[in-house]
Image (tube, rainbow, N blue to C red):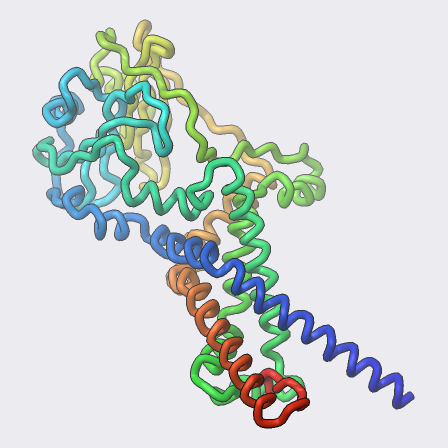
Length: 398
């Protein structure tokens, strides 16, 4: 019986050592991509603040204004667009201090990045241009590209999902490695478990953040693989398997340019949509094209800021159609909730704050973990030089 207990103890020690090595090398090998994902994820928790930090001129606008006719915004944008360009879409401010965003006609150029076009930001109170961006991807595009597919079209997107699973695994195994081997839970919570600040910071911060960090990482993987992870939910709900196309980060053919001489003006199309619905302030409008002579008009519902009524207004007939979104499936609802959790949109401000902080944790754990490993290697060499044949020093885990 005693031998059996010793065998179990030795087996557990060997398993623990295996996870120590696995945990360590996952952190070392994947340090750079995990840090990139983490830091860009933090930047995207509050995207408006990030954009304002890097592109302050876009926000040099009046905070209060009376909505002008859309033709005024079109004229203001055309004064800043290159000669010959046309306005393709207009996004009205969602909150005070945001400018009117106007998209110009896309150029037929294949290149890495978003569809090539100029964008103009207008002061909503005067329709005067305050900023213009050229054909190059801006800072926010790079943030999304790095976080969404590591700026590597094709293999990058699934790689990000795999990294989400790896970070989930690493966070959860870190809890086991944190657990004191003598079983004294409260001892594990003390600061001085190791010989230096790096070790203590790694253990303590790792314990308190492990489960929330695993949630952030797993929901990120879910966003990448909604079909596979949503299949069990569809099965339990008795629905067809989910078929999410996902948010593509690949470049397709450039969209068709706006119609040169539409029958309706933008203001007329908006008036038709308002008459067909409940009124409301304009949120977005895109112009018709020769391929699709339809105005797309989004109006804010009187019931709340998050509600939109979407209309398709036929430029030829003047008929407006209210577009109804299909009822989401159980897998759709799960995917939407996973995205809200991942971006900090669920569970209140404290969770959003943690999601922001969690983006810095891969860098913290990577640096402290590497320093711990190097320190242990140095101690090992020093011990063996002073005492040849001595066993390796055990990790400081209490």
